Image (cartoon, rainbow, N blue to C red; front, side, top):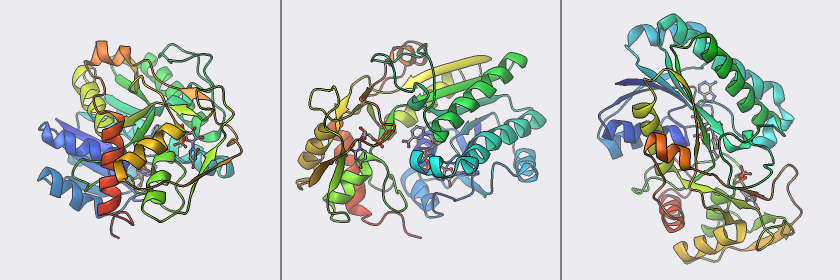
Length: 337
Ligand code: NAD
Ligand code: UDP
């Protein structure tokens, strides 16, 4: 099975490529290296024993896409490529709509020309907005509170319309909860450029001494300890969810939508404590104001993926923190240039 992996040099894409290789699939990576480094390819090879084909280019470049599709018999596309920082999306909405929405439309149009009719799209739990209750299942109403979330929602809606008009296509929307952790080898992990936006890489950089303290965004939410509660999922589990989706529904026509989460919520302070235990370091923190747009709690009902994809998360919080710390220690400043 040959699978075009857009954004395959990124955090989730690179981990997924390793598992594809382990399962005998052939990933072909397409990435513009906007948020990743060439050296990721060396690490994929080091861990998996195989160096995937890599095309450097942009999903919005029609000619480039046509040339890649013409060279290979692609069976399916996993579409990770996109911009993902909520705060940046508020400042640069056009860039987000262009990359995430236009990029996806250009990609799907190229797939249509190449007669490739199977795509798995990286969506997000952010499409549930501020849910009325938890756990969240796939039939909950969707909404968006920022341009990043709206770009994911618009793509979901475009793909839904497109699938209705083209019922022989297989379109899978995977709604990720909070991906964390890294490959157990410590060779691959999350490598945010600049100040991390997300909790786990921030905690990890405090523990290694790159940042002085964590700002905890609010301790007055209606949660057990007042801090925000999220469904953190190990990136290896998340990657396995893509393999399961490819195998179970990637060749079945239809629109398939799944939550990929653990079904368990942890608070910010629980994450800090777990990381301190894993690293043996103290993670200094200050309580500050709530971050605008944040919600109190969010965790998945993962039952549909369990029933239909035969997939469920198996890595616990300890593995998430231990593996993150292993990656951080081995690569204190991330991937080499
Ligand atoms: P990432 O930034 O590490 O990886 C994305 C990759 O896409 C990068 O290597 C980047 O260089 C590439 N890219 C971006 N725009 C491109 C373009 N126009 N053409 C070609 N390549 C391009 O991000 P990630 O954390 O691996 O996330 C992957 C996907 O999952 C994204 O679509 C993201 O929105 C989605 N997602 C991520 C999270 C998360 O917390 N990490 C949560 C939910 C959904
Ligand atoms: N958070 C925090 N400090 C940070 C980053 C995040 O307190 O520096 C909190 C945030 O308010 C939320 C949780 O950690 O409750 C997860 O935030 P993240 O940005 O990682 O993911 P989100 O759920 O917002 O997509």
